[in-house]
Image 1 (tube, rainbow, N blue to C red):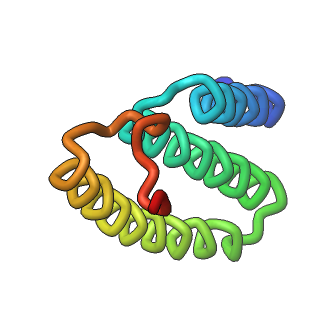
Image 2 (image 1 turned 180 degrees about the vertical axis):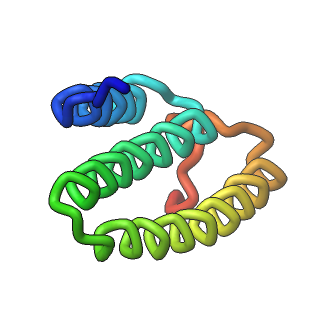
Length: 102
Protein backbone atom coordinates (compact mmCIF):
# COMPACT_ATOMS: atom_id res chain seq x y z
CA UNK A 1 0.00 0.00 0.00
CA UNK A 2 1.47 3.34 -1.03
CA UNK A 3 1.35 6.42 1.16
CA UNK A 4 0.67 9.79 -0.44
CA UNK A 5 3.25 12.36 0.70
CA UNK A 6 2.07 15.41 2.63
CA UNK A 7 3.47 17.70 -0.06
CA UNK A 8 0.84 16.53 -2.57
CA UNK A 9 -1.99 17.54 -0.29
CA UNK A 10 -0.40 20.91 0.44
CA UNK A 11 0.25 21.58 -3.26
CA UNK A 12 -3.39 20.76 -4.01
CA UNK A 13 -4.52 23.02 -1.19
CA UNK A 14 -2.32 25.87 -2.41
CA UNK A 15 -3.56 25.41 -5.98
CA UNK A 16 -7.18 25.49 -4.84
CA UNK A 17 -6.53 28.64 -2.80
CA UNK A 18 -4.80 30.39 -5.71
CA UNK A 19 -7.66 29.52 -8.06
CA UNK A 20 -10.09 30.94 -5.51
CA UNK A 21 -8.12 34.17 -5.12
CA UNK A 22 -7.82 34.62 -8.88
CA UNK A 23 -11.54 33.99 -9.25
CA UNK A 24 -12.38 36.63 -6.64
CA UNK A 25 -10.16 39.21 -8.34
CA UNK A 26 -11.10 38.48 -11.96
CA UNK A 27 -14.77 37.52 -12.00
CA UNK A 28 -17.56 40.08 -11.72
CA UNK A 29 -20.47 37.70 -11.11
CA UNK A 30 -21.44 37.66 -7.44
CA UNK A 31 -22.30 33.95 -7.46
CA UNK A 32 -18.95 33.00 -9.01
CA UNK A 33 -17.11 35.18 -6.49
CA UNK A 34 -19.08 33.50 -3.73
CA UNK A 35 -18.08 30.04 -5.04
CA UNK A 36 -14.44 31.13 -5.18
CA UNK A 37 -14.60 32.18 -1.53
CA UNK A 38 -16.00 28.76 -0.67
CA UNK A 39 -13.15 27.18 -2.65
CA UNK A 40 -10.64 29.12 -0.55
CA UNK A 41 -12.36 27.91 2.64
CA UNK A 42 -12.20 24.31 1.42
CA UNK A 43 -8.51 24.64 0.58
CA UNK A 44 -7.82 25.88 4.10
CA UNK A 45 -9.80 22.92 5.44
CA UNK A 46 -7.72 20.53 3.33
CA UNK A 47 -4.52 22.01 4.76
CA UNK A 48 -5.89 21.73 8.31
CA UNK A 49 -6.86 18.09 7.84
CA UNK A 50 -3.49 17.36 6.23
CA UNK A 51 -1.49 18.81 9.11
CA UNK A 52 -3.81 17.22 11.66
CA UNK A 53 -3.32 13.81 10.09
CA UNK A 54 0.43 14.32 9.72
CA UNK A 55 0.88 15.30 13.35
CA UNK A 56 -1.57 12.66 14.58
CA UNK A 57 -3.69 15.09 16.56
CA UNK A 58 -7.45 15.04 15.82
CA UNK A 59 -7.99 18.62 17.07
CA UNK A 60 -7.45 19.98 13.54
CA UNK A 61 -10.13 17.70 12.16
CA UNK A 62 -12.58 18.82 14.84
CA UNK A 63 -11.75 22.42 13.97
CA UNK A 64 -12.48 21.66 10.30
CA UNK A 65 -15.90 20.35 11.32
CA UNK A 66 -16.72 23.70 12.94
CA UNK A 67 -15.33 25.64 9.96
CA UNK A 68 -17.55 23.61 7.63
CA UNK A 69 -20.57 24.34 9.84
CA UNK A 70 -19.88 28.08 9.75
CA UNK A 71 -19.25 27.90 5.98
CA UNK A 72 -22.61 26.21 5.45
CA UNK A 73 -24.38 28.92 7.43
CA UNK A 74 -22.43 31.58 5.54
CA UNK A 75 -23.42 29.99 2.24
CA UNK A 76 -27.10 30.07 3.16
CA UNK A 77 -26.99 33.69 4.31
CA UNK A 78 -24.79 34.78 1.40
CA UNK A 79 -27.05 33.20 -1.21
CA UNK A 80 -30.09 34.77 0.45
CA UNK A 81 -28.42 38.18 0.22
CA UNK A 82 -27.50 37.61 -3.43
CA UNK A 83 -31.09 36.61 -4.23
CA UNK A 84 -32.44 39.69 -2.44
CA UNK A 85 -30.08 41.96 -4.36
CA UNK A 86 -31.02 40.25 -7.63
CA UNK A 87 -34.71 40.86 -6.94
CA UNK A 88 -34.06 44.58 -6.45
CA UNK A 89 -31.38 45.25 -9.09
CA UNK A 90 -32.14 42.49 -11.65
CA UNK A 91 -28.43 41.68 -11.93
CA UNK A 92 -25.70 39.85 -10.04
CA UNK A 93 -22.85 41.75 -11.71
CA UNK A 94 -20.72 43.28 -8.96
CA UNK A 95 -19.91 46.39 -11.02
CA UNK A 96 -23.61 47.22 -11.45
CA UNK A 97 -24.61 46.61 -7.85
CA UNK A 98 -24.11 49.67 -5.65
CA UNK A 99 -26.54 49.60 -2.73
CA UNK A 100 -24.85 52.59 -1.06
CA UNK A 101 -25.61 54.92 -3.96
CA UNK A 102 -27.90 57.88 -3.16
